[in-house]
Image (cartoon, rainbow, N blue to C red; front, side, top):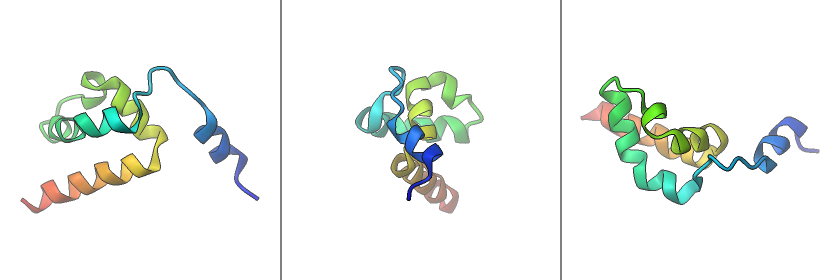
Length: 71
């Protein structure tokens, strides 16, 4: 049986959520903004919302942060 909270989150649609493709397009700039101390969620609100809702994109986001930390 699946967790109903997780299922509700996955099924919820928010028009402000730009989706995986558009988030991927700005993800590097989003991470750069975060690393520069900027409010990336204000600069890229649709991507920030999507990152809260999409485990796969959060994983990519974390990977970019990890890669930036190695530089």
